[in-house]
Structure formats: structure tokens, C-alpha cells
Length: 332
Ligand code: DP6
Image (cartoon, rainbow, N blue to C red; front, side, top):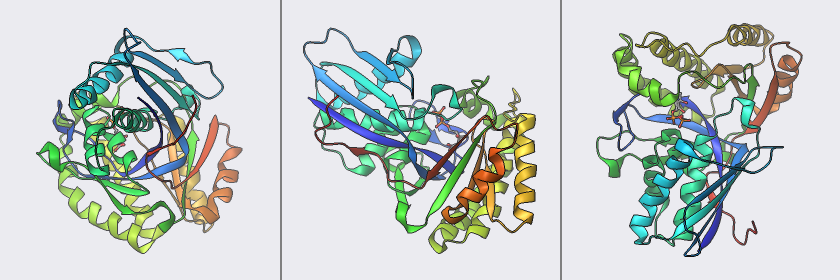
């Protein structure tokens, strides 16, 4: 009872920030993202009566396979337990997960990791689930953003107060619009405040309700910009959204300041690039690194512009990609 799945990381165009139900990971707002084809996790899950306990191993680019313990392992075991319950089995599993990006890159691995884990484990247990159900099961694993990595391309994760109605839907397939994310890694220090704490603190910001109130209109604009392939409209809204999320984070209790001075430098340098006529726009998730979104025809100009900046520690480039999928006959 073994299966392998590959799942992409994703970058949020409209951010998930705050929950209405912690246990079920039900978000306070709907969110929209683009899957990142070049940044992914490949996970093999092997259930067998031969294993006395669950074994979880993770490998990052250029690093040895490492056995995971403690709370990191527990999150994986909790997700396996959820799926084992559905399959009515107690079989333990060996989980091996490989990321094609470095651990200290500042790229969050939980979205790709939980999407790949849930996809592989469900297939290994032969659970009969469709994409919608798979996105719900992934969501229950606790990494909300992973819910969106299940569907292809440009994806919306719907909010609802009912678990069965909060899932991922595709807005457009990855090849509908050739967008690229040029990711500027400006700091690789692990964040002091996790997204988990951030979601918990979100509602304490006096700006949070204002943020929630502006989101239905923003979601509409971004959905349409994707369908119309309108980079200007998407970009302007993307930047407003990133600022809105970070204002809410900076003004919550405790206050969460994800930005570094290099984050501001990158934004200012992006403004000058734009003045030269290149359409490229920034967004940041729960961290200091800057994602520059542009049409793929401009990706090289964008990366050349930033490559030489002293504050850029490394740079990753990814186009829009497919969602999680099973790799048949994968030997690992
Ligand atoms: C700001 O709870 O999904 O990136 O800690 O990576 O599991 P992990 O994050 P999650 O929160 C993501 C918050 C966000 C916005 C987003 O991706 O929608």
C-alpha cells in the first residue's frame, strides 16, 4: 500500500489570514493563489503491518535525508491518523519527502508538503476521493495554504463555516496565462512568529475588519484579472493586498513585523524597474521575501535587475504550475 505524489508550493494573490475555526482550519476569508511549478515536494507514503511506528523522513535540496521527530513529526502523524480512520486501518507508515528547494531558502514548504502527503497517503490507502474532497482533507492537516496546492493552476480556496464547503476550486488552468514568480530571498532566518500565531492574532488588529470588508471586491477584481489576463489590474490589486495583509499583521497584538530593510529596498527597486516600462508587481507572504509577479516574457529582465543587488541572497524563478498529482510507478 504505497504511493508517491508531487505537489507544488503556491504564492497567494489574495492572502488567507485568520481563521473562524482552528480545529477545522476554516479561514475567515477566501483566498486566491498561483501554483509554482518549479518549487515542489515529492512524497512517498508506504503503509505496512511491518512498521511498528510511523517513520517520517524529509530531504531538502543538497542535504541528506533527515528523520523528523517532535511536533513536526506529530503534524504528519495527525494527518495520517485522519486518513487511517477513513480507511479503517491501523497500519503504520513510512513517509519520505523530498523538496527540490533548500531548507533555509525562506520558501515555505508546508503547502507543498501537506498537499503531497495527503495526496500520496490517500492513494496508498485507496481512499475514493475526488479533488474537492482531497482539498478538504488537506485543509484539515492544518496548513491552510496547502488546500490550494491540490487544484491546477490559478486556484481559489472558498471560505465557509461548514467544513464540507471550504475547498479549492480552479479559476484557470496553469497554461491559461504564462505568469512567472521571481522570488527574491532577502533573508533566510526562520521567522520568529509562525503563520499559526499570526492567524490567531489577526483579529486583534483594528484594521482587520476593514481588511475583511474590502476582500469581496478584491477577490472579484483578481478573479477577473486572471480570466482577462490583465497584468496591470492584477498587479495593482496584488500590491494593495500585500500591504493590507502586512498592515493587519503589524498592528495585531502581538505585533508581527515580517519585513526587513531589504524588503523595502526590493520594493523601491521594483518601482524603478516599473518606471522603465516593465510590468512587474510585488507580493509577500508571512515573511520578508519578495515575490515579483510578471508575465514570463519579462521574467529574465526582472531577474537580471535584481540578481546584482547586494541584499538578494538567492533568487528562484517559477512559472504557474499544475496541482498535486500521483506519480505512477515511482520507485523510492
Ligand atoms: C500569509 O497556515 O497556510 O502565506 O505556516 O505555511 O502552513 P503555513 O501557512 P498557512 O498560512 C499562510 C499565510 C499566508 C497567506 C497565504 O498563503 O494565503
